[in-house]
Length: 64
Image 1 (cartoon, rainbow, N blue to C red):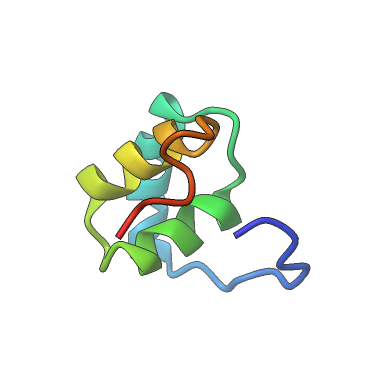
Image 2 (image 1 turned 90 degrees about the vertical axis):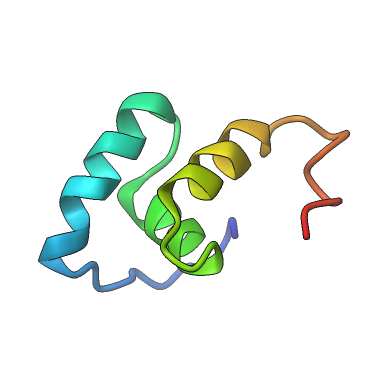
């Protein structure tokens, strides 16, 4: 997810969800959160969990 370089166009109806996720995962940009939401089929619970675990090397590469 890191190093994508291109900015994603975030739909306005998704921005509220991103702001809620940002309260939990303040270390991520809107674009990073949106990209993870898309990877998680727009599931905010799964997205929050993956973003929280992202920094942990034990879990980072074993998500399916």
